[in-house]
Image 1 (tube, rainbow, N blue to C red):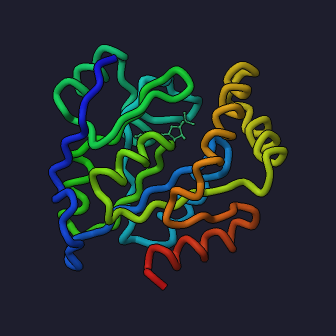
Image 2 (image 1 turned 30 degrees about the vertical axis):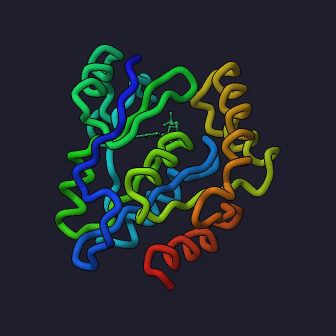
Length: 201
Ligand code: 5GP
């Protein structure tokens, strides 16, 4: 897989424009409940929108191309990397994931607040290219609870669960790099804390 320097077209390092939408980055270990939190936030706040990422992972049952992810073949993903189409991208548990610049640009230009739900390497890249993005790390109440949630989800085989748990420990160790850390124990409490971050309260 070739490497690229992300080439964002939304004013890197510029002062934030109050007229334009903001970028909110959610990171946290797989299984921590980022998806549920994001789904609830989108339901409750019409000004928010989610950036649909591209991935080389196979769709899980119920996942729709263009809605949950853009599911791409590896060669197609690599071509888009070569063409500089990604604001950031990373490899995670054997698959590639990336945020498409155009998706984010269009929505931010419309003044919408765009949510990225991405892993650690991508979140670090965003800090480098768009330092005004608010980056939130979602923590599980404990590693044991995270493992329970991953098993309950029943979407991954044993090998994938082990990979995700190993990776979770690396990610959790980096939580302090983020602007905000929120523990997803009680859903309503976590949502209220996230909404306070988004509104700046
Ligand atoms: P999953 O396979 O469970 O949908 O996602 C695996 C991990 O990839 C999650 O931590 C998710 O946040 C992350 N991810 C999803 N989309 C992107 C993306 O566009 N860029 C990066 N860097 N990570 C992503």
